[in-house]
Image (tube, rainbow, N blue to C red; front, side, top):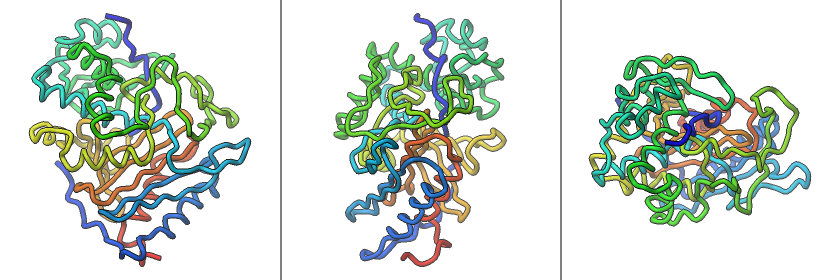
Length: 363
C-alpha cells in the first residue's frame, strides 16, 4: 500500500427536505436580466475576476451569462466552453462511481475501510479502519477529521456519531475503488460517467495537472500554506493531491448534463439511487447552513424555503456551485475564477435570484 494520498486535498467545500415548487418563468422571460444583474454585482463587489452561469429550464434553450474577466492581464472576457477546476463537486462523481461498483457486486457500502485498505487509517490517521464503513466515508460520518497538506491531523472521533466534512473520506473512497476494480479512480470516472454521458470536458487530471483549453485563469489570495497573499495566478498550481476529493476539471454544460442524469436516475440502479439521496444532518458541523448530506451530493434549503440538490466546490483559484430541483428540470451552474469571496453567501444569493418566489416578478 502506498503512502496515503490523503495528505491531502483541497480546501473544499461543501430525511430529504420537502421542496417548494420552483417558480416557472414564461417562455419569453426566464429571469435572465435579473440573473445577469446578480453576476455583475458579484464582480462589482470585488468577489472575483470573473463569473459565469448557465441556466437550464426544462427543454428551453440554455441561457449563459458572464461578468468580469477570464484573464486579469489581457482583459479577456469569460465565455462558454471554458474548463475550470470544480473542487469538491468531484465528490458527486466519486460517489456515483462507488455506487456503481456496489451495484456490480464488487463492494458493499457496509464493507469496512480495513477490508480494502488494511492498516491505512491506523497508520496515517490514528483511527480504527475496522469500525468505519464505506457508507460513512461517503456521508462524512466516519469520524475522521479534515486534513490539509502540511497540517497536523487532529485525533479522529467515534464513527457514526456526527457529520464532519472531511476530504480524507473521499480520498480513501477513491483508493478503495482502485483496490476493488484494479483501475485508477480517474479511469473509472471516465469509463463509467464521462464517456457514457459524452462529457468531453470533464476529467480528473493526472500528474501533469493540466487544465485544457479554453480555460479562464485561476486566481488566489492565499499562499501555499493557506495564509493571506496578494492576488496571484494559480492556474497551473500543483493540486494533484486533491484527487478524489476535489481534483476534477469540467465545464458548465458538462456539469448540467451530469447533474440532470444523476437527479433523474440515469446513472444508478434504484437501490443505489436511494442510497445516494439518503441524507444525514449537517447541523452543528460549522458547514454550509441548511443542508443535509447524501453520498456525494447534498440538499440545501434556501431562505425562501425552496430545496435544491447538487453540490459545490471550493479549491485554490476556483469556486463552483451546481444545483437544481430534485427532478432535474430547473438547474443552475456557476463558476467564479477566484477564491476570496464568501463562498456560501455568494452562491446562495445567486441561486435565490433564480429559485426564490419572493425575488419578485421576473424582469
